Image (cartoon, rainbow, N blue to C red; front, side, top):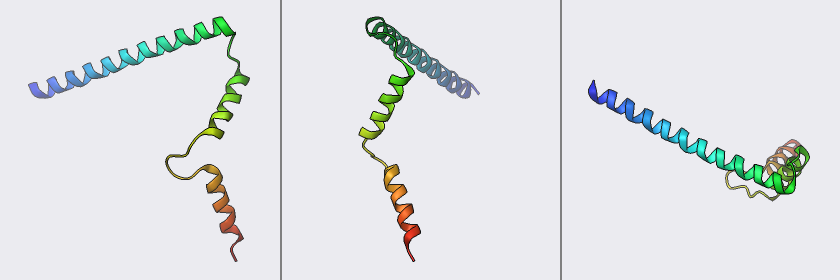
Length: 81
């Protein structure tokens, strides 16, 4: 019983440490974004959309096939007699 309680407390402590660490990182990220926007102006939804498209085009597939390859394969399969 004591071991189970100790393990549960240990797991809880690790969870709290992870949350504190994540919250600190998010606070640092928020501060960095605020500083960037102070210098260069607010980041717009349009800028985010443009960057997202560019990132997808430049991405390297490291697992599985790219969406374009999957789509081509499906079309090729439909063409077979």
